[in-house]
Length: 199
Image (cartoon, rainbow, N blue to C red; front, side, top):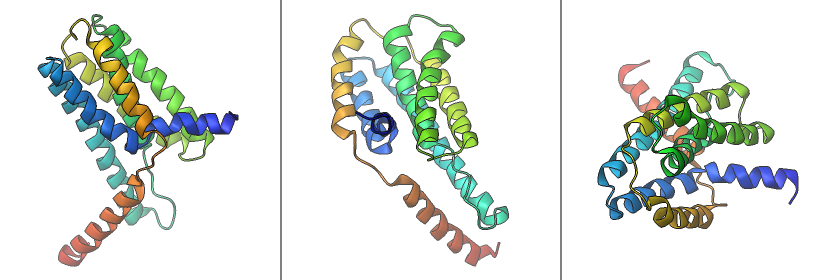
């Protein structure tokens, strides 16, 4: 496998086509395993971070519409932010859940963020500022989620990890065209609101 193919292989784990099914399947797994409170806290924390990713992207489009002229709109790296909060928090739950240190909570997300950021920069999918913004949001989301998530029960990793890995590889390689969809939603909404209130 060439270096560029390896980079693409890694970055594809951050696509929404993998991340979204993984969020729902993991939440169901945690619930079925009896870790209801952990499942709810994890799902809420991760979903809130994904919601923030969408809001920041929308704000970037709005800023470009108002002040950006014809340049490319600032677009926080969703691959980096989503991968960091999902994979980073899962690694912490499975490996470090008994450690309640903020520093230890931040280590897995930071490792994930560095790896995904490198792939996005290598592929020229985002600028340095965009991957830094994605890293910041993802790490904050992961650490806050980890700090509120209760200690995981013994055996959770052995039971859930094989299914989580299976979901990751089943959906790996699929691409969910989230960015163009968000841009279409923004432009339709912006035009509609503009007609009503005359921005």
